[in-house]
Image 1 (cartoon, rainbow, N blue to C red):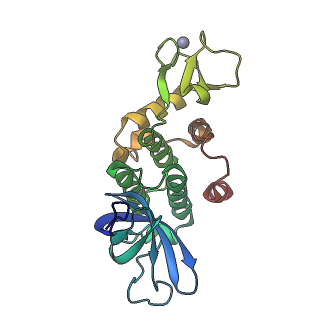
Image 2: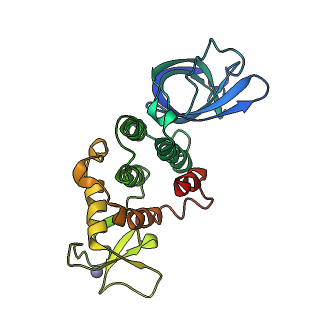
Image 3: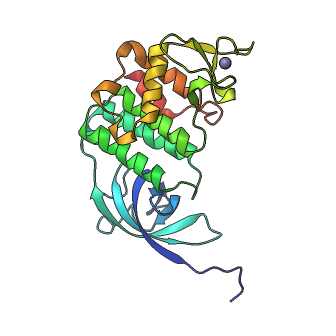
Length: 257
Ligand SMILES: [Zn+2]
């Protein structure tokens, strides 16, 4: 066999279903965020027709154990089997939770390239869905999720000190947000470019979310009061701007709530 032809590899891994779409008359193409292989798209033969083979498992938000046959040099794997671990019910029934969860999945899909994510990214998405399923839909969860996703994809913004002189952010320090510089600049270092002034309490809360394990980001002390929520959202969102040239459908849903 020539070296360039690589045989199929079968893997069994926990995964979150990120996206599905019908393919032809009877198949489905399913995007998984797996623990062991990052983001993988697979074709589930007969998934539209046969309800027996993939009973309710190939739906967004479900946590599964999937058996994939990956093919090197091919984008699509084969989905050989998929066993349900957890199907979020509250997310399916509550519009706000559904909108939050859809945003988590869509942002992940947009930010994570095929095969690149490590187990921590899978854990982050799995934990975000679990927090929404079992707790309140709270803006702090989304901001914590975004900040941790930025870290895992290599774009973590430096919010706690000036990117130029290192001066610390704090209750009495005025800081300006510079996405292109990857963080904030103090009042002395800020230049002419477009930037806006961050409110110290909002910045402080976002720094706390960055420093907290994501699974603890729903804590009472990290909640974002309505007065802080809009600014916190805009502040974190601007660090995604370069990667999100097209708007996300789930953001429109969130805004309509
Ligand atoms: Zn400075």
